[in-house]
Image (tube, rainbow, N blue to C red; front, side, top):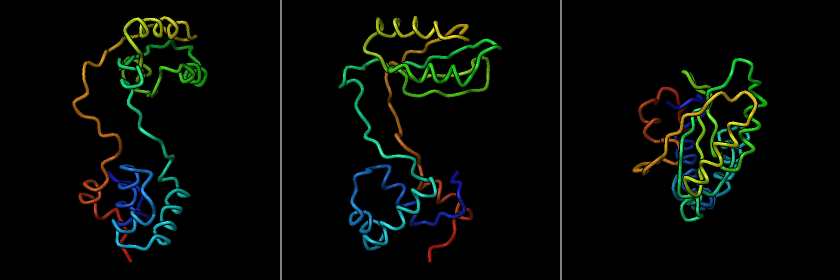
Length: 168
């Protein structure tokens, strides 16, 4: 579902194109949406200023860089855990790609990338030393047949037209 009633169809199309390729020029974006580059520049700057674009980044290939093992690690913490301190400690571990606070038995789920099961074992040993950690449960990813790599905007926009303002 698209949030943000101040988005129009052109904004959605620009956001979609930017997340597919953040290096797209304003002229190329303009050709996609039927605007001149200066108008696209203004719209993109407004989208950035309003927080719709958090940052620009390259999506790297973990296995090609030697990080062939992906795992999801559930973290079960004690009631006395200081969550800000815990997440700061976990976030400082270079293997951690994502930290998610979740509902359920576990408190957090981490997405981690490591070189091997030996590297994962070392990571888990260090993780268990963090104050507040009670136990972990690890799921190793065997393959990833689908990964979106962004938000699906165009379908969501089509299914929720009442949330978008009209293009003027």
